[in-house]
Length: 446
Image (cartoon, rainbow, N blue to C red; front, top):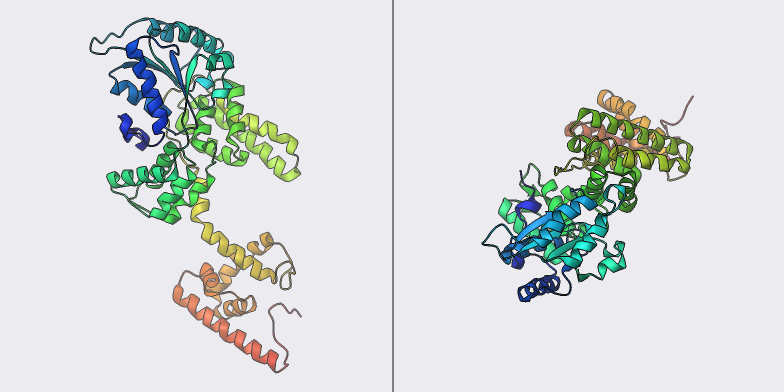
């Protein structure tokens, strides 16, 4: 099944959302090849993820009738491979007589580094100087590339896509998919994407999984997204990494909390790794990372954090025997979905715990933490379902409202009876207090 990003990927330049000036500059550079070989034989499209750089490159090739050869981040980009693929292609014409030229597309060129891809960037630099074919380079961070490399290229910046444009695209996809969506929900998805159209479409598809209607409440889970580096991208970089340094770099640049990353890695490990032995080693690294995070929480020894980070990033990346070149559709951790779905329940539990304590920070009714108060809730549930009068006395004493009582009793009618009986008891206690008579309290002993 195609992802919506692929399904609705624009095939023509005019259909690409945002960055009209960047697209115009790219077309102008490409047209210059029709007059001969230009001074700058390579063009570097750079900018944040999800701004249409790769889509624009492919659309350009199709629109100009050019064949294309690609080399992306899932491919190894060693010196030998760059020489064999890019070197040969830059010198030879196309095999298709109907296509005048070919264009060479190298994605994530700023990610060519490390021992595994040693010499790849130098080889690419050499072929740019002598190429007879146009070369389109794509990078998120052009400043990670050497200055002499950048000087060989025409630089074209892609900016984040404005929210109105993202919203327009989301509405169009909803219309084509037959989805009814609350406009407030779509606006939140667009805002949360921070100008990354790809992540916005991925969010929309995730939220609409198995249903044809999206409400504002469905967007609660989006709060786990990071505004700078999407967690989906972090997962891909960790799982696809072939060196410890690149895996740790992915986690470091994500700026996500280690606990959150660990949940994502644990959820998506079986989606990415197919070999049972790879899975076993991966889960072993995850379990060790979890142990260190637990020790940090208990001992407050933050010096252990580096070990947890190493295990959940480099440990998981190095657990595989081979690199998986497939595309994996990563999923939100189920635990986070459960948190979103049970948020209301947890809010009620916190409210009841505070009422059991009494006035805030004074513990005028029960002396203990909210955690201790919550441990009483199962006992209270038993009382509320088996002793009507005692339940009403508790509700009166701790000023529980109908929503609090309904937390313990699913039967709305019974909950209502307890609530109104509690109000009667509260009224009686107020009358006794007014007359100066002694009040009977559940909190009195002896």
